[in-house]
Image (cartoon, rainbow, N blue to C red):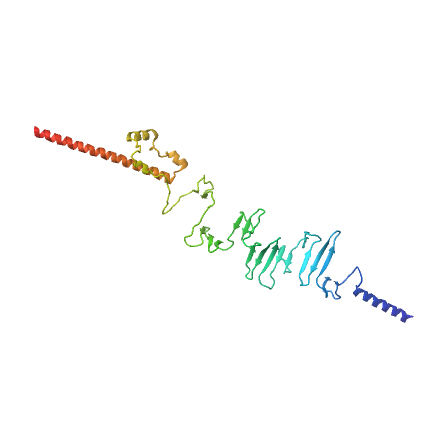
Length: 341
């Protein structure tokens, strides 16, 4: 009898052990310890799903009304998609970071190039793919989805900082801990420079020797040392030193020498000076203090006065010559009278 009972116990144990490893034709699988395999008898992970001898396959996660898919293709690519068209896929939505080629991500999404060289993160639109590239020399490139496309940074408002985590302007470029630096703007064949030195001076230079630099060439005004240009193309709050300034002025007062020019008599000029305290057609001290002067206009007015003075001098010389001739005549007549007596 004991032998019969022992044989039954041994048989039941064998059946139980066999049932723990053979899950064929069962709808529900429970594994209190170890791993679970689908199409595999030796799973290497908590859930190990190989594709077997067939091609690609799909793991489906069923919700109330939808089914999400985790697909692996015949070429070993993997796809994750939501339960309907245009649905969302969330990774680690309970906090923490996501690593790509990286088991220790240090940011919300941390993409490492691994052991290979440079790589590219691609963001696909309907017809184009934008690229975020990093090269083997650790440089980073951001480019749009087609030739001559645009790249926007922080286009929803806020500022952008370069070497600066607290930008206070739309684009805030800091030199960091180093000395002076240069911002370069590359054209087809040349590179313009916007430089700041260690002594905080700023330099703007064109892309080659003797090249031009244009400020606000699309209209508007430029202020130096002031934010109020008062309608002038260039407003400078301070002194200007130059070796040469060319001012285009029109009209130029050659009209003074025309025969029909109305030259004021000196008596009228003297009367104007006595009553108003300045020359005719010359701004007063108060006007100059309030409005300044136009170099071109003022130079023309000053030249006009010089030309008028020249005409007055010529008139006076003619009068002096006439007086000298008259004096000679009088002297000759006196000499004749003396001879007669």
